[in-house]
Length: 521
Length: 58
Image 1: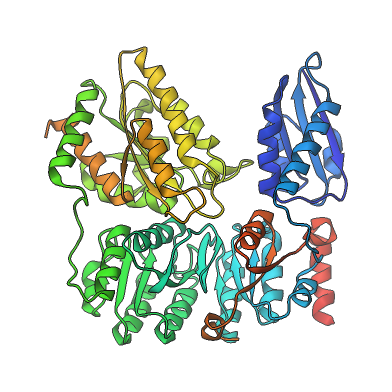
Image 2 (image 1 turned 60 degrees about the vertical axis):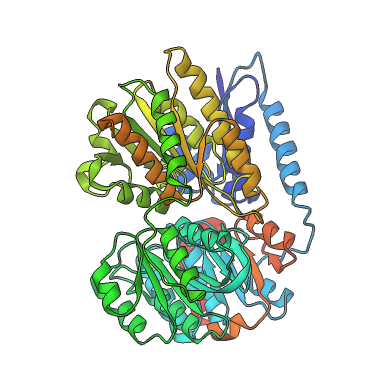
């Protein structure tokens, strides 16, 4: 086994391109481990941690590309690895079919398209604030996808945006749909009369998808970034977006989505909701229902419920909490009985493996007090995954969190992280596996296929112990998404996976099967 | 341009960072341009701070 590295000075490629390339090179015969990256401090630390760094790494800058590989010299050479790198890189750049002029700076780009009005920023976090500031100074709206932007920078940039009447969506803003154009990770949905401001990416995606499935559409979908409703930022962008939707003639109903805000920030939102001439539906996932209702807004019990209520109000129908299933109870009971019959009495543990953080959070909140669920985003500190007793208990993971995405793409882009967790976290004690499958722009081309392949493998493994497992999924996607909702559902169902129409319903079915296994009810 | 003015215009996007976001926009026929971005000054913090100071003086 040998470790060799190759450095290409002044050759910049974005992190997702390089992480996906690393994954491809890893598949080469004879390669034990490989890392391709730019010479940023983060990547250099990662390379050192993996034992893939050489002495010349000290001279690297963020504009230098490195390929570091451990391989069997009898089977492959560094030259072959570099050739494979170039071939894969060329393929990935050819496949986007884009040979348009690429200006080298924001200002040159603004010159290149007269009337430019939105800047999408996804450069590494440490460089993002400067670019955003330039964009705002030039009078352009911003969607800031990058994370690792300081809260001080976020506050300063949002204050500037508000002063100028501009949007500054982010940092860490994954989804937005402006004027019908999906930005970053968004689903293809029809246009309509419901406007959304969301502080949580997959939560917003789930609401927009459910609105589309119910036959209505979206006027605008504004993201704020996850920290917007904390005290430090004071809800600057949610308020900016909320007021814009109130003034927007194309919006008839407004939906606000966030984890519970800081109390002082919630108060500001409630004051605006109280004076809003348009109906306001609020899902502060697990938030204060009485406070929401006291200002005349409509409170929700799930993301799906938020969509149902927004659509109901738009259609002038009475709205009530949607607590059940959109499938007949007899059919649900049949599914539960069949599922429970597959399991042995010791298969009582839940493995919820999510790619969407808000969907994982919603799952834990809906499952509630019946279960002690250990998680990397626990509902209370004592339920942190590190406290899991001897690996046994219920687990719900947000696989998109930083700890799982160091040096590898987000699991919505590359399903490999979840594939690995299927292997490491599912065993003969697992009763139910709960997953989300998120479609849409930015997402993997076939996430349902990846889940189906994992389930096939798990079933083969468990069959050696004379066991099976119940797998429940929901697909956050539409018939207009390139991955296609119906095709994705069919792929999952062919593998015997129970596919529910929403995350909330998938969680409820999980609860029913688990209760049947634990208590026999 | 206010947010409500933006809602009345054709969206025209400048993309800095992940190329795939630009590709998605082009595939939908959105007017968009991708910046051939790389960190200024090789990403060295000291140099970036200096550049920022120079720009402010300008």
